[in-house]
Every structure is written in C-alpha cells, then in structure tokens.
Image 1 (spheres, helix red, strand yellow):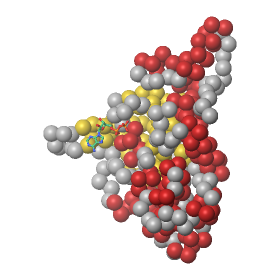
Image 2 (cartoon, rainbow, N blue to C red):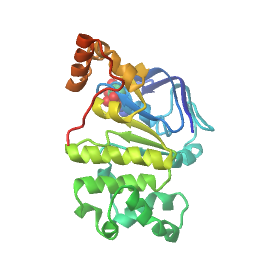
Image 3 (cartoon, rainbow, N blue to C red):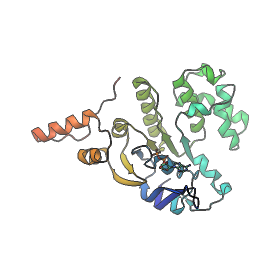
Image 4 (tube, helix red, strand yellow):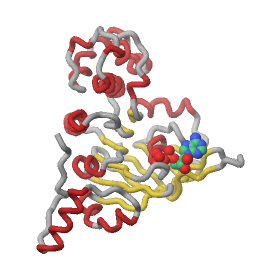
Amino acid sequence: MDIVFRDVEHRYQVNTPFEKRALYDIHVDIRSGSYVAVIGHTGSGKSTFLQHLNGLLQPTKGTVHLGDYTITAGKKEKQLKPLRKKVGIVFQFPEHQLFEETVEKDICFGPMNFGMTEEEAKARVSEWLALVGLPEDVRHKSPFGLSGGQMRRVAIAGVLAMEPEVLVLDEPTAGLDPRGRKEMMEMFASLQQQKRMTIVLVTHSMEEAARYADEIIIMHQGTIVRRGTPEQIFRHVDDLLHLGLDVPETILFQRAIEQKFGVQFHTPCLTIED
Ligand code: ADP
C-alpha cells in the first residue's frame, strides 16, 4: 500500500485561543515495502504526522491517500476502521497498554476485535510469539510478570497479529539497553523482509535511522525539511548540525576522514554498541 500526503496541514484545537498548527505543507510519498525513518526535535510534528497514517488524526487541510483510502477532513470514524487493521501503530512504551491476565489473551485481543474467532486466534499464538522472538512458555503467563523488553514484545505481537501492511513505530527502542535496542531493531528489519511490510520509524537515534532505513525524513517546526537516503542525508552534515540535530561522532569522524584524504565512503559507518 503506497502512502501519499498532499499538502497536509494539521491544527490542534481549531477555533480556540489554543489553536496550534502542528503540521503544514506535508507533501510526501512512501512506497509500499520501504523503510522510512522520521527524525526531528521534540515538538517538530513527528507524532502528529504518524497519527495521520491510520486516520487517528485527520488533516485540517490537504489529503492523505493510503492505498485505496483517502482521508480528508471530516471522514467518519466508521469509514476508517478497516484502515486501523492495515496500519499498525506501536506507540511509545506500548507495554503500558497491556491489560489482559495472560500473554495469549493480550495478543488475541486485536484480531478478535476485528472478527477472528477465539479458536482461530489461539491457533496462531505460537506463530505470533515466534515473530517477536518470544518462547512458547510465556503464553499462559501474566504479561506483568515478564521483563520490560519481553512485555514490549508481547505488545508488538498484538499489533503484528492484525497482519498490518504498514508498521508504524514510535521510538520503539526507548528505555532499552544497547543490546535490547539492537535486538529490537534487528527484529523489525527481519520482519520487514519476511512480511514485506512498509515500516515508518520515528527515532531520536540517527544511528538507527542510518543503519536500518532506506530513506530518512527530517522534520522541523511542523514540516519536512530534508528527505533522502541515509547516504544523501549524512553527506550534508553541516546542514544537520545547523538544524540542531545530534549527529553521531562516528559520522563526523567519517566525514573528517573523507575530507582529509579525499576518499568517499558509500554508506555511513555506524555501529550500534553491543
Ligand atoms: P513530536 O512528536 O515531534 O515531539 P508533536 O507532533 O507531538 O511533535 O507536536 C507538534 C506540535 O504540536 C508541538 O508544538 C506540540 O506542542 C503540539 N501539540 C501536540 N499535541 C497537541 C494537542 N493535543 N493539542 C495542542 N497542541 C498539540
């Protein structure tokens, strides 16, 4: 499913003294199957942008096309329900949304809400656990007795169980240690390949963006100011510094070497520490 934003604007609290324009002039195409990272300062509009990807928020101006769906201002909630299944959003700290007594019930909640019978859903729990790298023996446990990283995987399994075509990830590695971060990012990379999903990742980590995404979008004060492959984006390091973004030392070092010796690296040299 291709995603197309045309001149999208979003204002919060329209016609009140608190009216705030959080997005404007958003004009972007995200190809089906691509892996896009969205980076930018807090308050730059990333979360508002993400919520337009499944109609949780609607544009106050402009149009969002998601495959055959078109979202413009005033679309009815009922018309958007099928879209919620196609676009899965993993919000920050998704483990805070777990609520059932067992892992199995939590994972089955979404698919059952969208018409799968309890039997059908239960028959697939092992498959969904395997997708997120959880062992079968957590199935009948309380999610609240698991480690933080495992709880997050349960919450992600619940989103994957809906078999979304697009997976939207809002800071999915926040709060994890470097090893947990790396494992989580590798898991998404392998899911994208296995399931041919489109991934839209919001991250504060330039390293994650450069290492995993095909394309990077930089947001600044409510609009998209840069867009390109990691190679294109990190070629203009001064530009990124000018936008006040934290460029990893490794990239600064690489660029210094390139300038000094006149060599050119083809990919940003990045390592996520083990
Ligand atoms: P980011 O995800 O990049 O931190 P957000 O999309 O959350 O940015 O916010 C963009 C702008 O919109 C910010 O100025 C923020 O204060 C404002 N904003 C976000 N949510 C609301 C809301 N519910 N009501 C009013 N303003 C909001």
